[in-house]
Amino acid sequence: SLAQDSSLCPEAAAALSRAEARKSRRNRTVFTEGQLMGLERRFDSQKYLSTPDRADLARALGLTQLQVKTWYQNRRMKWKKQVTLRPGMPYILGSP
Image (cartoon, rainbow, N blue to C red; front, top):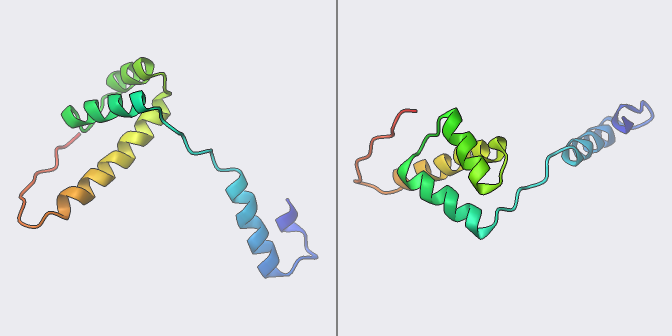
């Protein structure tokens, strides 16, 4: 890689390395309105999905299992933040 070029100063090599790492990142998934509605509806009733449930939901929505898994992970974090920001509201996080 260019970042390993010994003629570059350490700062330039580090910046280039970060830029190269960013390039290799996966593109952000843009979900359709229907996919989001399906994901949210299911999340409202089921905070954790089993592997077969995840496969079924992915198939039904035209997504990969990894996309559903990642969406669920991110949505649970958002949900936990929303729940903990409500003072005086007791809650119990369900276990998987």
